[in-house]
Image (cartoon, rainbow, N blue to C red):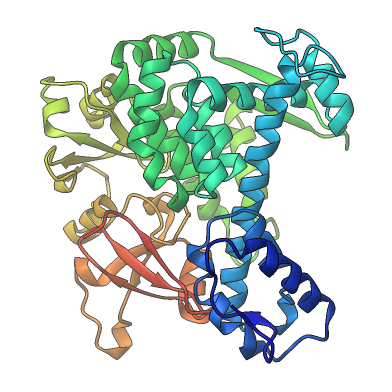
Amino acid sequence: MFDQKTGWLVAHLPGEVEDYLYELTLAAAADPEPAEACQPILECLDEMTPGPFLAAILSSVDPTRLTGADAVTVMRAFHRMGSYCQAGEYETMFEVAHAADPDTLDRYRAVNDYAPEEIGAALSYTRRRADSELGVALDITIRLPRVRAGLASGDIDGPKARVLTMDTAHLEPANAREVVDRIIDEVSDLTTGHLRARLRRLCIEADPEDAKSRYELSVSERKVVAEENPEGTAALIISQCSPEDVYAARDHINTLARRLKTEDEPRTIDQLRADVALDLLVGRFHNGPEGSGGSVVVHADLTTLARLDDTPGELGGYGPVIAEVARKVAANQAQGAWTAVVIDPETGEPLHTVSIRRRPTVAQTRMIRALHPTCGFPGCRMPAINCDLDHRIDHARGGPTTVTNHAPLCRRHHMAKHHGGWRYRKTSRTGIKWVSPLGHTYRTGRPP
Protein backbone atom coordinates (compact mmCIF):
# COMPACT_ATOMS: atom_id res chain seq x y z
CA MET A 1 0.00 0.00 0.00
CA PHE A 2 3.00 2.31 0.44
CA ASP A 3 5.45 2.92 -2.37
CA GLN A 4 8.90 3.24 -0.83
CA LYS A 5 10.30 4.69 -4.04
CA THR A 6 7.92 7.61 -4.36
CA GLY A 7 7.00 8.00 -0.71
CA TRP A 8 3.29 8.18 -1.60
CA LEU A 9 0.20 6.07 -1.09
CA VAL A 10 -0.66 3.93 -4.12
CA ALA A 11 -3.46 1.84 -2.58
CA HIS A 12 -5.36 1.78 0.66
CA LEU A 13 -6.96 -1.29 2.20
CA PRO A 14 -9.38 -1.47 5.18
CA GLY A 15 -7.62 -1.85 8.52
CA GLU A 16 -4.37 -0.27 7.33
CA VAL A 17 -5.13 3.31 8.36
CA GLU A 18 -2.91 3.35 11.45
CA ASP A 19 0.05 1.83 9.58
CA TYR A 20 -0.44 4.31 6.75
CA LEU A 21 -0.64 7.29 9.05
CA TYR A 22 2.61 6.22 10.71
CA GLU A 23 4.39 5.72 7.40
CA LEU A 24 3.02 8.95 5.99
CA THR A 25 4.30 10.85 9.01
CA LEU A 26 7.78 9.49 8.33
CA ALA A 27 7.46 10.37 4.66
CA ALA A 28 6.39 13.92 5.47
CA ALA A 29 9.56 14.42 7.48
CA ALA A 30 11.76 13.25 4.59
CA ASP A 31 12.97 15.28 1.63
CA PRO A 32 10.11 15.96 -0.82
CA GLU A 33 9.92 13.82 -3.94
CA PRO A 34 9.23 15.19 -7.43
CA ALA A 35 5.78 16.70 -7.87
CA GLU A 36 4.66 13.93 -10.22
CA ALA A 37 5.05 11.40 -7.39
CA CYS A 38 1.90 12.71 -5.74
CA GLN A 39 -0.29 12.13 -8.81
CA PRO A 40 -1.81 8.76 -7.76
CA ILE A 41 -3.23 10.25 -4.59
CA LEU A 42 -4.21 13.65 -6.02
CA GLU A 43 -6.28 12.05 -8.77
CA CYS A 44 -8.74 10.69 -6.17
CA LEU A 45 -8.46 13.51 -3.63
CA ASP A 46 -11.82 15.05 -4.61
CA GLU A 47 -13.60 11.79 -3.75
CA MET A 48 -12.04 11.39 -0.29
CA THR A 49 -14.25 12.13 2.68
CA PRO A 50 -12.70 14.39 5.32
CA GLY A 51 -11.23 12.87 8.46
CA PRO A 52 -7.89 11.76 9.95
CA PHE A 53 -6.90 9.91 6.77
CA LEU A 54 -7.35 12.95 4.51
CA ALA A 55 -5.74 15.19 7.13
CA ALA A 56 -2.63 13.01 7.13
CA ILE A 57 -2.40 13.13 3.35
CA LEU A 58 -2.78 16.91 3.24
CA SER A 59 -0.18 17.38 5.98
CA SER A 60 2.42 15.84 3.67
CA VAL A 61 1.62 17.99 0.61
CA ASP A 62 3.92 20.84 -0.33
CA PRO A 63 1.70 23.38 -2.16
CA THR A 64 4.70 24.95 -3.89
CA ARG A 65 5.33 21.69 -5.73
CA LEU A 66 1.83 21.36 -7.20
CA THR A 67 0.65 22.11 -10.72
CA GLY A 68 -2.03 24.78 -11.05
CA ALA A 69 -4.82 22.23 -11.50
CA ASP A 70 -3.61 20.11 -8.56
CA ALA A 71 -3.34 23.20 -6.35
CA VAL A 72 -7.09 23.81 -6.85
CA THR A 73 -7.83 20.16 -5.97
CA VAL A 74 -5.75 20.32 -2.78
CA MET A 75 -7.33 23.67 -1.85
CA ARG A 76 -10.77 22.07 -2.08
CA ALA A 77 -9.63 19.18 0.09
CA PHE A 78 -8.39 21.59 2.77
CA HIS A 79 -11.75 23.37 2.57
CA ARG A 80 -13.61 20.10 3.20
CA MET A 81 -11.32 19.41 6.16
CA GLY A 82 -12.18 22.83 7.55
CA SER A 83 -15.89 21.98 7.35
CA TYR A 84 -15.24 18.62 9.03
CA CYS A 85 -13.43 20.37 11.90
CA GLN A 86 -16.19 22.99 12.14
CA ALA A 87 -18.76 20.18 12.54
CA GLY A 88 -16.66 18.70 15.33
CA GLU A 89 -16.44 22.09 17.04
CA TYR A 90 -20.21 22.55 16.89
CA GLU A 91 -20.82 19.03 18.19
CA THR A 92 -18.51 19.64 21.12
CA MET A 93 -19.99 23.10 21.70
CA PHE A 94 -23.38 21.45 22.09
CA GLU A 95 -21.92 19.23 24.84
CA VAL A 96 -20.24 22.19 26.54
CA ALA A 97 -23.61 23.97 26.64
CA HIS A 98 -25.16 21.00 28.47
CA ALA A 99 -22.18 19.95 30.66
CA ALA A 100 -23.08 20.00 34.36
CA ASP A 101 -19.74 19.26 36.02
CA PRO A 102 -16.03 19.67 35.19
CA ASP A 103 -15.10 16.14 36.31
CA THR A 104 -18.05 13.95 35.21
CA LEU A 105 -20.13 13.13 32.16
CA ASP A 106 -23.25 14.62 33.72
CA ARG A 107 -25.36 16.77 31.40
CA TYR A 108 -28.19 19.23 31.95
CA ARG A 109 -31.38 18.49 30.02
CA ALA A 110 -31.55 22.14 28.93
CA VAL A 111 -28.82 24.54 27.81
CA ASN A 112 -26.85 26.11 30.64
CA ASP A 113 -27.87 29.79 30.86
CA TYR A 114 -24.21 30.79 31.09
CA ALA A 115 -22.90 28.53 28.35
CA PRO A 116 -22.11 31.54 26.09
CA GLU A 117 -19.73 32.85 28.76
CA GLU A 118 -17.94 29.49 28.91
CA ILE A 119 -17.68 29.30 25.13
CA GLY A 120 -16.69 32.94 24.71
CA ALA A 121 -13.93 32.74 27.31
CA ALA A 122 -12.54 29.50 25.85
CA LEU A 123 -12.50 30.72 22.23
CA SER A 124 -11.94 34.47 22.80
CA TYR A 125 -15.36 35.26 21.32
CA THR A 126 -17.48 38.28 22.11
CA ARG A 127 -20.75 37.52 23.87
CA ARG A 128 -22.64 38.18 20.64
CA ARG A 129 -20.53 35.78 18.61
CA ALA A 130 -20.65 33.11 21.31
CA ASP A 131 -24.45 33.39 21.34
CA SER A 132 -24.57 33.20 17.53
CA GLU A 133 -22.25 30.20 17.23
CA LEU A 134 -24.04 28.34 20.02
CA GLY A 135 -27.32 29.00 18.21
CA VAL A 136 -25.93 27.32 15.09
CA ALA A 137 -24.62 24.38 17.14
CA LEU A 138 -28.03 23.86 18.76
CA ASP A 139 -29.89 24.27 15.47
CA ILE A 140 -27.88 21.76 13.45
CA THR A 141 -28.00 19.23 16.30
CA ILE A 142 -31.69 19.47 17.18
CA ARG A 143 -33.60 21.14 14.36
CA LEU A 144 -31.59 20.53 11.17
CA PRO A 145 -29.54 17.33 11.47
CA ARG A 146 -28.96 17.15 7.71
CA VAL A 147 -27.02 20.41 7.92
CA ARG A 148 -24.78 18.87 10.59
CA ALA A 149 -24.26 15.78 8.40
CA GLY A 150 -23.43 17.95 5.38
CA LEU A 151 -20.92 19.94 7.40
CA ALA A 152 -19.25 16.79 8.75
CA SER A 153 -18.97 15.31 5.26
CA GLY A 154 -17.45 18.51 3.87
CA ASP A 155 -20.31 19.04 1.41
CA ILE A 156 -21.17 22.41 2.99
CA ASP A 157 -19.03 24.83 4.96
CA GLY A 158 -19.55 26.92 8.10
CA PRO A 159 -20.87 30.09 6.39
CA LYS A 160 -23.45 28.06 4.42
CA ALA A 161 -24.47 26.16 7.56
CA ARG A 162 -25.11 29.50 9.27
CA VAL A 163 -27.22 30.69 6.31
CA LEU A 164 -29.26 27.47 6.36
CA THR A 165 -29.99 27.81 10.08
CA MET A 166 -30.54 31.57 10.30
CA ASP A 167 -32.62 31.95 7.13
CA THR A 168 -35.02 29.17 8.18
CA ALA A 169 -35.22 30.21 11.83
CA HIS A 170 -38.67 31.79 11.38
CA LEU A 171 -40.21 28.53 10.11
CA GLU A 172 -41.74 25.76 12.17
CA PRO A 173 -39.19 22.93 12.64
CA ALA A 174 -41.03 20.58 10.26
CA ASN A 175 -41.20 23.26 7.54
CA ALA A 176 -37.55 24.16 8.10
CA ARG A 177 -36.48 20.53 7.67
CA GLU A 178 -38.59 20.26 4.51
CA VAL A 179 -36.95 23.36 3.04
CA VAL A 180 -33.46 22.10 3.89
CA ASP A 181 -34.24 18.67 2.44
CA ARG A 182 -35.19 20.32 -0.85
CA ILE A 183 -31.93 22.24 -1.22
CA ILE A 184 -29.26 20.38 0.76
CA ASP A 185 -27.94 18.38 -2.22
CA GLU A 186 -27.29 21.58 -4.19
CA VAL A 187 -25.67 23.67 -1.45
CA SER A 188 -22.08 22.73 -2.28
CA ASP A 189 -22.43 24.36 -5.72
CA LEU A 190 -24.03 27.59 -4.47
CA THR A 191 -22.47 30.77 -3.10
CA THR A 192 -23.97 32.10 0.13
CA GLY A 193 -25.70 34.82 -1.93
CA HIS A 194 -27.31 32.30 -4.24
CA LEU A 195 -28.16 30.09 -1.27
CA ARG A 196 -29.97 32.95 0.48
CA ALA A 197 -31.98 33.70 -2.65
CA ARG A 198 -32.95 30.04 -3.13
CA LEU A 199 -33.86 29.70 0.55
CA ARG A 200 -35.99 32.83 0.42
CA ARG A 201 -38.01 31.37 -2.42
CA LEU A 202 -38.39 27.97 -0.72
CA CYS A 203 -39.45 29.62 2.55
CA ILE A 204 -42.11 31.64 0.71
CA GLU A 205 -43.39 28.46 -0.93
CA ALA A 206 -43.36 26.56 2.38
CA ASP A 207 -45.54 29.13 4.17
CA PRO A 208 -46.86 31.92 1.89
CA GLU A 209 -49.02 33.50 4.60
CA ASP A 210 -46.11 33.72 7.02
CA ALA A 211 -43.92 35.23 4.28
CA LYS A 212 -46.58 37.84 3.50
CA SER A 213 -47.02 38.73 7.18
CA ARG A 214 -43.26 39.06 7.71
CA TYR A 215 -42.93 41.22 4.58
CA GLU A 216 -45.78 43.53 5.65
CA LEU A 217 -44.39 43.84 9.18
CA SER A 218 -40.91 44.67 7.89
CA VAL A 219 -42.21 47.30 5.44
CA SER A 220 -44.28 48.86 8.24
CA GLU A 221 -41.01 49.37 10.16
CA ARG A 222 -39.16 51.13 7.33
CA LYS A 223 -36.92 53.95 8.46
CA VAL A 224 -34.05 56.29 7.67
CA VAL A 225 -31.01 56.23 9.95
CA ALA A 226 -27.96 58.51 9.93
CA GLU A 227 -24.82 57.02 11.44
CA GLU A 228 -21.40 58.50 12.14
CA ASN A 229 -18.26 56.82 10.78
CA PRO A 230 -14.98 56.73 12.74
CA GLU A 231 -13.27 58.78 9.99
CA GLY A 232 -15.59 61.72 10.58
CA THR A 233 -17.90 60.96 7.65
CA ALA A 234 -21.46 59.69 7.92
CA ALA A 235 -23.77 57.07 6.41
CA LEU A 236 -27.42 57.45 5.45
CA ILE A 237 -29.33 54.15 5.59
CA ILE A 238 -32.84 53.68 4.22
CA SER A 239 -33.94 50.27 5.38
CA GLN A 240 -36.83 47.79 5.26
CA CYS A 241 -38.45 49.25 2.15
CA SER A 242 -40.23 47.40 -0.64
CA PRO A 243 -37.56 45.76 -2.84
CA GLU A 244 -39.05 46.96 -6.13
CA ASP A 245 -38.71 50.59 -5.03
CA VAL A 246 -35.19 50.08 -3.68
CA TYR A 247 -33.90 48.46 -6.87
CA ALA A 248 -35.64 50.98 -9.10
CA ALA A 249 -34.06 53.79 -7.06
CA ARG A 250 -30.64 52.18 -7.29
CA ASP A 251 -30.95 51.81 -11.04
CA HIS A 252 -32.09 55.42 -11.40
CA ILE A 253 -29.07 56.62 -9.40
CA ASN A 254 -26.76 54.43 -11.46
CA THR A 255 -28.19 55.74 -14.74
CA LEU A 256 -27.75 59.38 -13.70
CA ALA A 257 -24.24 58.74 -12.39
CA ARG A 258 -23.12 57.08 -15.62
CA ARG A 259 -24.53 60.02 -17.58
CA LEU A 260 -22.23 62.31 -15.58
CA LYS A 261 -19.13 60.13 -16.03
CA THR A 262 -17.50 62.01 -18.89
CA GLU A 263 -13.82 62.13 -19.82
CA ASP A 264 -13.41 65.35 -17.85
CA GLU A 265 -15.15 64.05 -14.71
CA PRO A 266 -12.53 63.24 -12.01
CA ARG A 267 -14.93 61.45 -9.64
CA THR A 268 -15.17 57.67 -9.65
CA ILE A 269 -18.49 56.03 -10.50
CA ASP A 270 -19.01 55.14 -6.81
CA GLN A 271 -18.42 58.75 -5.80
CA LEU A 272 -20.83 59.90 -8.47
CA ARG A 273 -23.53 57.48 -7.27
CA ALA A 274 -23.20 58.75 -3.71
CA ASP A 275 -23.24 62.42 -4.82
CA VAL A 276 -26.24 61.87 -7.11
CA ALA A 277 -28.21 60.13 -4.36
CA LEU A 278 -27.60 62.92 -1.87
CA ASP A 279 -28.24 65.63 -4.46
CA LEU A 280 -31.59 64.06 -5.29
CA LEU A 281 -32.55 63.86 -1.61
CA VAL A 282 -31.61 67.46 -0.81
CA GLY A 283 -33.21 68.79 -4.01
CA ARG A 284 -30.14 70.11 -5.81
CA PHE A 285 -29.90 67.65 -8.72
CA HIS A 286 -31.09 69.18 -11.99
CA ASN A 287 -29.29 67.16 -14.65
CA GLY A 288 -31.82 64.44 -15.43
CA PRO A 289 -34.65 64.43 -17.95
CA GLU A 290 -38.09 65.04 -16.53
CA GLY A 291 -39.72 61.86 -15.32
CA SER A 292 -36.71 59.62 -15.88
CA GLY A 293 -36.73 56.72 -13.44
CA GLY A 294 -34.99 53.51 -12.55
CA SER A 295 -35.79 50.10 -13.99
CA VAL A 296 -36.54 46.71 -12.50
CA VAL A 297 -36.95 43.32 -14.16
CA VAL A 298 -39.61 41.09 -12.60
CA HIS A 299 -39.91 37.35 -13.33
CA ALA A 300 -43.25 35.71 -12.54
CA ASP A 301 -45.19 32.59 -13.48
CA LEU A 302 -48.17 33.19 -15.74
CA THR A 303 -50.34 31.48 -13.11
CA THR A 304 -49.10 33.93 -10.46
CA LEU A 305 -49.92 36.97 -12.58
CA ALA A 306 -53.36 35.47 -13.23
CA ARG A 307 -53.83 35.02 -9.43
CA LEU A 308 -54.28 31.27 -9.83
CA ASP A 309 -51.55 30.61 -7.25
CA ASP A 310 -49.02 32.43 -5.08
CA THR A 311 -45.76 31.12 -6.51
CA PRO A 312 -42.96 33.59 -5.63
CA GLY A 313 -41.72 35.97 -8.30
CA GLU A 314 -38.19 37.28 -8.66
CA LEU A 315 -36.69 40.75 -9.06
CA GLY A 316 -33.53 40.89 -11.16
CA GLY A 317 -30.48 41.28 -8.93
CA TYR A 318 -32.52 40.94 -5.73
CA GLY A 319 -34.06 37.50 -5.76
CA PRO A 320 -37.38 35.94 -4.76
CA VAL A 321 -40.29 38.11 -3.64
CA ILE A 322 -43.78 37.19 -2.51
CA ALA A 323 -46.41 36.85 -5.25
CA GLU A 324 -48.15 40.07 -4.23
CA VAL A 325 -44.99 42.11 -4.91
CA ALA A 326 -44.50 40.45 -8.32
CA ARG A 327 -48.10 41.21 -9.30
CA LYS A 328 -47.77 44.79 -8.03
CA VAL A 329 -44.67 45.42 -10.14
CA ALA A 330 -46.30 43.93 -13.24
CA ALA A 331 -49.50 45.93 -12.69
CA ASN A 332 -47.62 49.22 -12.24
CA GLN A 333 -45.56 49.00 -15.43
CA ALA A 334 -47.28 51.94 -17.04
CA GLN A 335 -45.90 54.20 -14.32
CA GLY A 336 -42.25 53.28 -14.64
CA ALA A 337 -39.53 51.66 -16.73
CA TRP A 338 -40.23 48.03 -15.90
CA THR A 339 -39.60 44.82 -17.80
CA ALA A 340 -41.87 41.86 -17.10
CA VAL A 341 -40.81 38.31 -17.87
CA VAL A 342 -43.57 35.69 -18.00
CA ILE A 343 -42.31 32.27 -16.88
CA ASP A 344 -43.55 28.83 -17.89
CA PRO A 345 -44.54 27.22 -14.55
CA GLU A 346 -43.62 23.75 -15.87
CA THR A 347 -40.09 24.43 -17.12
CA GLY A 348 -39.23 27.68 -15.35
CA GLU A 349 -38.04 29.21 -18.62
CA PRO A 350 -39.16 32.60 -19.99
CA LEU A 351 -42.13 32.53 -22.36
CA HIS A 352 -42.53 36.20 -23.15
CA THR A 353 -41.05 39.57 -22.26
CA VAL A 354 -42.78 42.93 -22.11
CA SER A 355 -41.01 46.28 -21.91
CA ILE A 356 -42.34 49.81 -22.13
CA ARG A 357 -39.09 51.73 -21.80
CA ARG A 358 -38.94 55.09 -23.49
CA ARG A 359 -36.03 53.76 -25.54
CA PRO A 360 -37.16 50.16 -26.21
CA THR A 361 -34.45 47.47 -26.36
CA VAL A 362 -34.56 44.87 -29.12
CA ALA A 363 -36.40 41.62 -28.46
CA GLN A 364 -33.12 39.71 -28.44
CA THR A 365 -31.71 41.81 -25.61
CA ARG A 366 -34.86 41.37 -23.56
CA MET A 367 -34.77 37.61 -24.04
CA ILE A 368 -31.05 37.31 -23.18
CA ARG A 369 -31.66 39.15 -19.91
CA ALA A 370 -34.78 37.11 -19.26
CA LEU A 371 -32.88 33.84 -19.68
CA HIS A 372 -29.96 35.10 -17.57
CA PRO A 373 -31.24 37.56 -14.90
CA THR A 374 -27.72 38.03 -13.51
CA CYS A 375 -24.14 37.87 -14.77
CA GLY A 376 -23.46 34.41 -16.16
CA PHE A 377 -20.16 33.95 -14.27
CA PRO A 378 -20.09 31.44 -11.37
CA GLY A 379 -21.21 33.11 -8.15
CA CYS A 380 -21.82 36.60 -9.59
CA ARG A 381 -25.17 38.27 -8.85
CA MET A 382 -24.74 41.51 -10.80
CA PRO A 383 -28.15 42.19 -12.44
CA ALA A 384 -28.11 41.48 -16.16
CA ILE A 385 -29.42 44.97 -16.86
CA ASN A 386 -26.09 46.35 -15.56
CA CYS A 387 -23.97 43.85 -17.49
CA ASP A 388 -22.36 43.82 -20.93
CA LEU A 389 -23.96 41.51 -23.48
CA ASP A 390 -21.08 39.30 -24.53
CA HIS A 391 -20.72 37.52 -27.88
CA ARG A 392 -19.58 34.05 -26.83
CA ILE A 393 -17.98 33.70 -30.24
CA ASP A 394 -16.62 37.14 -31.02
CA HIS A 395 -18.42 39.07 -33.76
CA ALA A 396 -15.05 39.76 -35.37
CA ARG A 397 -14.56 35.99 -35.75
CA GLY A 398 -17.95 35.45 -37.32
CA GLY A 399 -19.99 34.98 -34.18
CA PRO A 400 -23.69 35.53 -34.93
CA THR A 401 -25.78 38.15 -33.14
CA THR A 402 -28.27 35.67 -31.71
CA VAL A 403 -29.72 34.91 -28.29
CA THR A 404 -27.85 31.60 -28.12
CA ASN A 405 -24.51 33.30 -28.79
CA HIS A 406 -24.92 35.85 -26.01
CA ALA A 407 -24.74 35.99 -22.24
CA PRO A 408 -24.72 38.94 -19.83
CA LEU A 409 -21.35 39.43 -18.13
CA CYS A 410 -20.48 42.18 -15.68
CA ARG A 411 -17.50 44.27 -16.69
CA ARG A 412 -15.08 42.37 -14.41
CA HIS A 413 -16.09 38.94 -15.71
CA HIS A 414 -16.33 40.20 -19.28
CA MET A 415 -12.66 41.10 -18.96
CA ALA A 416 -11.95 37.72 -17.34
CA LYS A 417 -13.38 36.05 -20.42
CA HIS A 418 -11.45 38.18 -22.91
CA HIS A 419 -8.18 38.69 -21.03
CA GLY A 420 -8.14 36.34 -18.02
CA GLY A 421 -8.22 32.97 -19.75
CA TRP A 422 -11.79 31.98 -18.76
CA ARG A 423 -13.90 30.24 -21.43
CA TYR A 424 -17.56 29.29 -21.55
CA ARG A 425 -20.15 27.64 -23.75
CA LYS A 426 -23.92 27.37 -23.59
CA THR A 427 -25.22 23.96 -22.47
CA SER A 428 -28.89 24.93 -22.82
CA ARG A 429 -30.93 28.10 -23.23
CA THR A 430 -30.17 29.02 -19.62
CA GLY A 431 -27.16 26.84 -18.75
CA ILE A 432 -23.50 27.85 -19.10
CA LYS A 433 -20.40 25.72 -18.64
CA TRP A 434 -17.21 27.61 -17.71
CA VAL A 435 -13.61 26.39 -17.88
CA SER A 436 -11.10 28.18 -15.65
CA PRO A 437 -7.53 29.07 -16.66
CA LEU A 438 -6.35 26.20 -14.40
CA GLY A 439 -8.56 23.67 -16.15
CA HIS A 440 -11.48 23.26 -13.72
CA THR A 441 -15.10 23.40 -14.89
CA TYR A 442 -18.06 25.18 -13.28
CA ARG A 443 -21.71 25.37 -14.31
CA THR A 444 -24.21 28.20 -13.90
CA GLY A 445 -27.88 28.56 -14.75
CA ARG A 446 -30.30 25.68 -15.08
CA PRO A 447 -28.88 22.30 -16.12
CA PRO A 448 -29.62 21.08 -19.66
